[in-house]
Length: 468
Image 1 (tube, helix red, strand yellow):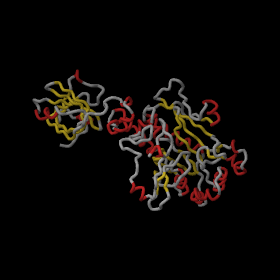
Image 2 (tube, rainbow, N blue to C red):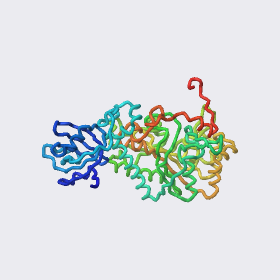
Image 3 (tube, rainbow, N blue to C red):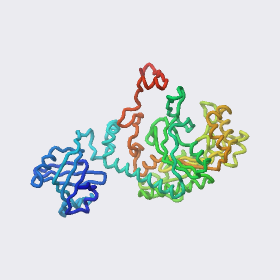
Image 4 (tube, one colour):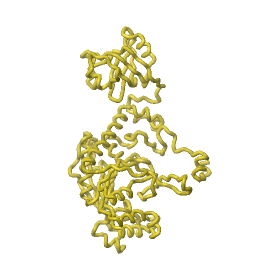
């Protein structure tokens, strides 16, 4: 007999079916044993009567929550009084004729038939595979999948091509520490995991792709908080032959498509636009929540912030550095001052952020496509010509082979799904996140390397005395 998904049993009254899944709840009423059985599609109530099958009844007496079972039986209608209007299969139940235990389960470390937010975080991370079985977490994973599909659907219709870029790359300044990967084949040298595919997507514009995107994994060794992980997913996109407003319109359409398809209301369309100066003056920060004190969770209040400073002063280093990244183009009317090194604190970039409900949801900009301007930015940042060549020579050289004007953005996918799910922490929408101290779910990492691994990589670990 072919397996039937539980959601499909509602249309099989009077038929014999085979289902497979987990015991969600077991209720022993003496002669009759009732089970709620769960699979990926839904939940069904089954009844085991010793008069129908003594063997099945005997096997059911061993069951606990999360046992994996295979059941055969008849789909019968429930009486009017027993109908559960809140369940897709609430009008039927299954009378079991055969029960086979496929896998046993130990007593659970915490209850998964309830909201697990109240469970200790360390326990949730250790037993994340159980945490993901809870209704809320399973719903969040399905929502994440739906949102990713909506992103791909929209961008594909807009003529974008999805391209993967390398995970082993060279260090690129994105405002955080790099995760370094030692090279075994080239001792003493290191790859860096990408903080963003920034340089690669610009190279793809030079390669003539014109419209690129990917659901990119990005790694940043930075302090953790509720909306930040060591690794995250961003909707990375880049466009050739566009101006700033073209990117804003594209991303605005994408956000509306995803949010409304997931049942959300948009606070205001088109999205309001604030300059960076206006935002700081009005809200005290460049990320803010337009919903006011009520903060209706079904409303997403998007807004644009534009005209960011091109440079900012680093008091520790006593030099200027980039405000967002060193590839953001200055506003056209500020290029001449930049090249002369004049009025640097007041230069503005063609840089823009998307904020929503108090979070920075995306950042992007028009890129520098003139190698002369790019070299000048690095010079102002304090890089020597030799340092610029060593770190960015490959990109500047590429500009000299027909670089189109281009611009892009990278909405944070985890934060977007967090807002869609009405969650307050992105760990709730990531299958296997790290905890607040950076330790991985289920697997005990970071962990020491073996002596052989270190020897192969020509690495010696010199721990502080208090860590030895």
